[in-house]
Amino acid sequence: MLQKLLTTLLLILGLTVVSGCIDEQPKEAELESIIKSTLLSNGGDQLFAIENFKIIKSYERGVAHVIDAEYDLVFNRSLREITADLKRASPLAAYEPFGGTSLSLLTLQNKGVKAFKAGDIIRMNGSYSFVQENSDWILKHSAH
View 1 (cartoon, rainbow, N blue to C red):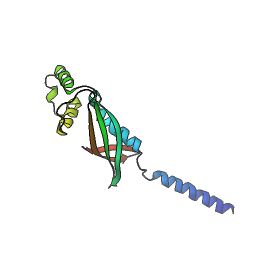
View 2 (cartoon, rainbow, N blue to C red):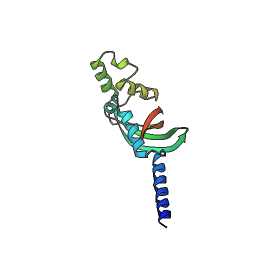
View 3 (tube, rainbow, N blue to C red):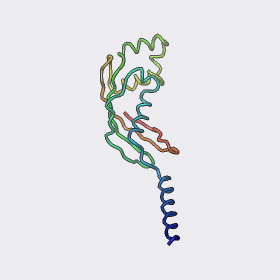
View 4 (spheres, rainbow, N blue to C red):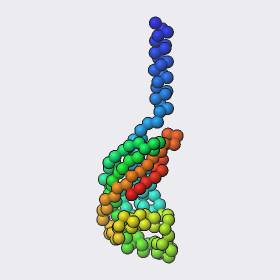
């Protein structure tokens, strides 16, 4: 009887350890936080806030976890103000194609946004691919 109990306990312990090693599905709140942090980095937080974030679809593609999401960008300042600040900071800053606020503006321009003022809202959507490295989920690719 004691041997059966010990065997059962060892089996339960073994299953618990194995289940802890299996990749878990990412939590939607964690993925939302990663996406928001990425969008607001490199000067994005100077341009806009993110509101009404919603995950539309969540699925596996190979080793990646993919989500399709939509959200609102709420502009903090007008395009005119931001462009003026960039030009004051560096005459070439407004024309640098990569990095910082210029990259955020280029992304918006590619979406057809020509001008905006503080308080304007633009509905955005995108597809984001994550992979798990160790126990962390890492954003590997995004398409808007």
